[in-house]
Length: 168
Image (cartoon, rainbow, N blue to C red; front, side):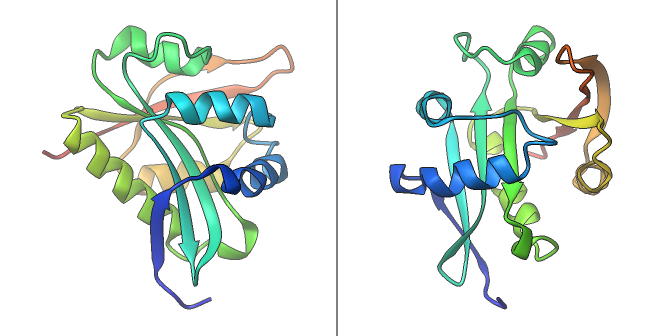
């Protein structure tokens, strides 16, 4: 596993991989079945698959402003405050590929999308209850800072709502 990270758009045949990795990370991601994945993918600005040595290593679902039909409480929090943004709905890296630059490669591509769409910020949320320290540290290293917090479920999940400015 020493290869470079290659990004491509997700295809329907990637859905089993996306669903498996999402389920393995459901402690810090929202649950997702195939119908929900299909809806997200259809509304996404981009659904990325990151490959290392031709094997899927991670996925990310990226939205942009204006997706009013999207039912995410976090997305709508950003939409009420930022007229233009690119939103990382979810990103998950398969365990064997963590710490290998996969997340950074995906976020570099997300910032490229933000520049292409002339969005001034990239938005994301990170769980603070339960505490997701690796993600919080990673996002800080990518230039994100907290602009709000909210509880997103009856079972006590709290998120840090964060943005990073886009250098155009």
